[in-house]
Amino acid sequence: MAKEMQKTSMFIERNPGDYENGDICKNLDDDGRPKRTGTWVTASAHIITAVIGSGVLSLAWAIAQLGWVVGPAVLMAFSFITYFTSTLLADCYRAPDPVHGKRNYTYMDVVRAYLGGRKVQLCGLAQYANLVGVTVGYTITASISMVAVKRSNCFHKHGHHVKCQTSNNPFMVIFACIQIVLSQIPNFHNLSWLSILAAIMSFAYSSIGLGLSIAKVSGGEPVRTTLTGVTVGVDVSGSEKIWRTFQAIGDIAFAYAYSTVLVEIQATFGNDAPGNFLTGFGFYEPFWLIDFANICIAIHLIGAYQVFAQPLFGFVEGWCARQWPDSKFITREHAVDIPCYGVYYLNLFRLVWRTAYVVVIAVVAMIFPFFNDFLGLIGAGSFWPLTVYFPIEMHIAQTNLPK
Image 1 (cartoon, rainbow, N blue to C red):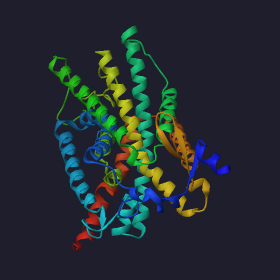
Image 2 (cartoon, helix red, strand yellow):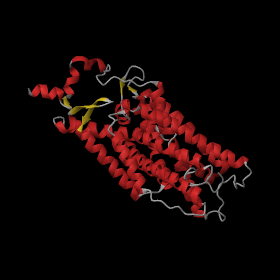
Image 3 (tube, rainbow, N blue to C red):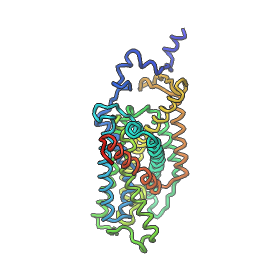
Image 4 (cartoon, helix red, strand yellow):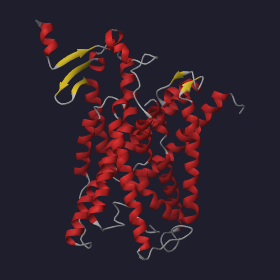
């Protein structure tokens, strides 16, 4: 009787050992892991979601600080560096042979296979600290975009002279509630639909921003630009110029640095430009288009948050499963029959851990609500080790190049 009730119950226990029997084996890859179902479309969606992130929103400000000579040169330099080192990193997906070697499913696994030692811990520290920072930054940016919609409507209704101040905190809570639900998506394999939606939103708001910028310049409005960026003694002091220059370079580095999730994906306006050109109100009209662009940003960041959070979720859950393999709270999954969806496998540890993570990140974002400064900090701290140093070191080890 108990067995019959268990079969008809809403919750059906599933042991990890069940994979060794029956039809489940058919869903395993040649290395014993769940079969990879990604395609070039889903992989491209993950990459676009990661690359065309909130970093592009501060590029106008970064170029304004650097000027029309240094700004584009830095953009091209970072673009070339990222492309070159990303190809090296992609070749390290398998080890020791790039074609027939054993697959590595995370950045740390790749570093462990080729370099080993303390460099594995250094890679993990840099990568996961970066992922935490990005999720904080995306929480801040998403709330700013939500607030921008409300302020845009306020400006349209009451005039541009009205302050229309609105707190970001309620919108951070809304964003966090959405992320708590989406964080229950088990892994990258189940994330493709969200990344495709986010990628579409990326193109939408980037195109709107470009179109508004072209319209503003072609409309004959006075826009003061210089070859060397903001002018010392006119716009800023000498020390402010130096600080803003380094901050702008950090912002550009952040906009290009997606190497932190590359391995996981492969396993599936002038000198006065605002810091965020769609929410800093470089534009007021047409207000409905600004609203639509900011809604696109918020939707995109909902997906981008998951792209950067999933590797961290997987790392913590994998580590805990290895530390406490006999804990049912950590390893046991329960099949939940959800109407209009099907069977969802609920893991209690995943539910508690991921919910706690999203809540903590939201609290940190409320305490540290600075957009440009935060992006510069993340970009400056993570670009060199994750995008440049480790890929080149692993390529040298893979090909036995003399140092």
